[in-house]
Each structure stands twice: as C-alpha cells, then as structure tokens.
Length: 533
Ligand SMILES: Cc1cc2nc3c(=O)[nH]c(=O)nc-3n(C[C@H](O)[C@H](O)[C@H](O)COP(=O)(O)OP(=O)(O)OC[C@H]3O[C@@H](n4cnc5c(N)ncnc54)[C@H](O)[C@@H]3O)c2cc1C
Image (tube, rainbow, N blue to C red):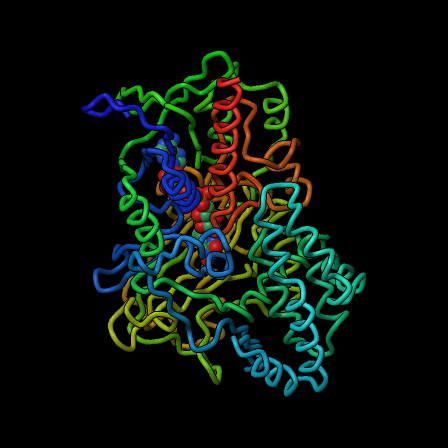
C-alpha cells in the first residue's frame, strides 16, 4: 500500500464482501501480500449483522441463510471453523404455510420431507425421494460445474458422465422445465410445487422461464442435503471468520476506505486511488469485488475500457430492487396453525401461481399487490440472536427497478421515500398477520430498508439489486457480465472482476472471488515465465 513503510502489496482487493475476502484468502495462501480496501466501517458486504434494530437483538442486515456456502468447495476448503465460525440449523429447513392451515415442510432428513408430502398427497413422497436420488447422482458435480470458471471442463465432464444414472434426458428436461411447471408436471399435490417455486423465487428469473427450474431444484436439493445453515451469533460472524483467516496469513484489511478510481497505464492496472486522496500502487493485480456498473466507467475511466466491455455494459441489466423489513418480536411468530417442526426460512404466498404472478409483475415494472415474501425466523435457527422466547425476524421481497404501476391500493410510485417504504412494509406485514393473527401486537421494534438504504450500506446493491445483475439466462455463463468468455478477466491487464457480477453470480459461495484469484495467479505465472524467456 502507500503504507507508512511505502510497501507495495502484490494485490489490492477492492471490497471486503464474501467474494473479496475469499479472493484475498486464496492469494494469501499462494504467498502473495494482500491489502483489502473496504468502503464500509465493517467487513462482509451483504454478509453483516448488528444490534441496530433493537439493542437486545442481533439482526442480519442483508443475507442470512448459507446453503451455497456450505455446499461450496471454495468456502469449505478455507476451514473457517478454525477461525471461529460455528454453524447452526433450525429444527426444519424451510416451511410454506397455506391459508387453510397446512405447511409444506422441508427437512434435512429426506424421508421426513417425503412423509409429510405423502400425507398431503399419496404418491408425492415416492416422487420426492426419486428426485432426491437423481440429485445424489449429479448434484455435487453440478454445483462444482456452476462454481468453476467457464468452461467448467472437469466438473462438466463429471456431470455428463453421471447424467445417465441421474435419469439422462429426463433429468435434463426436468431442470429445463420452468419452476412454475415442475410441481404440477412431476407431483400430484401442491406441497412440492410450493417448496420448489418458493426456492426458484430466490433468483430473479421469472418462474415461467427456462433457468428458473434449475435454480428451484438446486436450492431445494441443497436444503435437503446441507440444510440452510446460519452462522451462530449473526451473519457477520461468517465474514469475520473470513477476515480473521486472511489476517492470520498476514493480509491487511482497511475499512472505511472507499476506492474512487483505478489507474490504468498501457492497458494495465497500476494503482488504486482512495477517497482520502491516497494513491496505492499495485505490484501484481487488482481484484475488484465491485458490481460491474460501478467498476466499468466509474472506478475505471470509460476511455480505459476495451470496446467490448463498453458495448456490453450499455446493455447490462440489474436484477430487481428489494425492500427488507426487520422486526424485533416479544415472542415467536404466532402462526395461526403452527407447523409441527419450526422452520428457519418461511415462504409466504397463497400458491405457486401467486409466486409466479408476483415475479412476472416485478419483471414488468409492477409492484405486486400480494408480494412473495422470504421470511427468516432467525432466533428459531440460532437462539443466540435474541432473548429466550423472542424472535429476530425479517422478510424481504423484490420490487421493480423502474416502477410503472402499483397493483396494490397504495398508489406507490417507486420513490421509496419514508412514506412509501412504511406503507409497503405494512403491506408485507399484513401478509404475515393474515397467517399469524396477533403478529402486530408482538412487535417491539421495526426497521424498513428500501433500495436506497440497502445501497447506502453496500454500494454493490445498486437500486437494491441483491445479485450483482440479473440471473436470467441472457446474462449468465459466457454472457456475465458482458458477452465474452464468462471469466474474471476484464480485458485490462492485472484487473479482475471478483464480485457477484461475474460468473456464476449472486449468493454466498465465493466462486467469483476464487475464480478471480486463480486468474490473477495464472496470468502472473505466465508473465513471469515470459519475462524469463
Ligand atoms: C437482502 C439480501 C439478502 C440476501 N440473502 C442471501 C442469502 O440468504 N443467502 C445467500 O447466499 N445470498 C444472499 N444474498 C446475496 C449475497 O449476499 C450476495 O450475492 C453476496 O454478498 C455477494 O458478495 P460480493 O462479495 O460479490 O459483494 P458484496 O457482498 O456486496 O460486497 C461488496 C463489498 O465491496 C464494497 N465496495 C464496493 N465498492 C467499493 C469501493 N469503491 N471501495 C471500497 N469498497 C467497496 C462494499 O462496501 C461491500 O462491502 C442476499 C443479498 C441481500 C442484499
């Protein structure tokens, strides 16, 4: 850095989100010296928590459940448990209540999930176990392939080799089926469709579009195999474990240090500039855990960008905005008809069709009248989050980046000022109150984060977009973030895109960070070899 000692680090990582921290760890493991510069006062990006809704409660500010981290070979390999991370699981993984008092429940024990689904519709239990068995044959390789740089040669071959055992073209067809259709095509009752559609709703792919089915099956089967674990003490404990590991290897992390520019000379990144006026020279590489529209044309000047990137970014599409509500509750959620086992994650929608309708409305610029809610009962999952018997609860839902109309009665225009935020939070809360009468009377504190509040706490969440750009098929794989090779290279020497804007996209799995670090190491090796010859 422009350290007191004048020392130049091999790598500067911009942003201490999970991807930035994974990249830093991997470079440190390879023996590089690494400086991480983070704009916010705390590390973690969208993996943070604080007692800022109520002093007796720890609330996750953004993300909460980490099946992708648990399944990710990248994060598993870091051994974060040795750096203080402890995972916790709710008694049940996921639940979806319906107005008539039934729950579709996902357990880590597949037999138990199947039993519940079979009780609701005989035959669905066996069909569920069949889906699980197909996943067993292919799941790990599919996850490996998704998390490798493109093209995923080794894992891809693994997937192909096992495809036959997993049901061949039948399974391929299932994964290509839109999420909204899987339930009714492959099962008789509504439970499996609710579980699958709700999980498909974690991405922003419309549920009647190809690609949503793969997401739905992936998230559901991960829930089935690894659960939806949470870090004990709050989401921030995951980020802190990553940071502690990096620091134990000599990495330096500077918080409250916003990077305002990246200098490029002769097509190569040479230094980063900070808000305080520092110019930090870079020995080998800059890894940007920065959302693509803020990296290209903002941190890197327009004239320094390759024409391909400039052109591609003019068509770059964000994912929708988000409104998140946090509650500190005096007791647990008073579900009118409680589930037999308490789930950590709850999906709120009357039907699979209603989830599909809400996702279609958001894509078309409409604020849903009946938003699909993802809900986290965090004290159920981890009782350390709040005093005994109380609940640290949140719910979030997606809203359009550009609002055309409001399908509800509030006439919201998408300004998301305080009045709009509060009225929309009331709409979300009413969805829970309908299923849990008396919910409102348990509220000790409530906080509403609209798109602007989310972005103020993490600049990568542009307009409240949580995934670094749409996960729709036209912006995935070789199209992410701009048409090219689907890799971390930016076309500028020594500068690598390490954020969720890179393949394979959003979620806490660390793959973009790891891919960027590997690319930086490989290029550096080649440069050194060439210099010697
Ligand atoms: C409300 C919400 C709920 C979510 N729920 C889940 C979930 O339950 N499970 C899951 O797996 N994923 C979830 N996600 C998605 C997941 O959190 C993100 O995909 C993931 O955090 C992306 O990691 P990242 O490192 O690419 O970026 P981020 O986590 O956004 O981190 C980027 C970091 O870079 C910093 N930064 C940006 N620009 C600069 C700059 N110029 N100078 C210095 N620092 C800079 C930011 O301050 C931030 O700390 C959720 C996201 C949100 C917002």
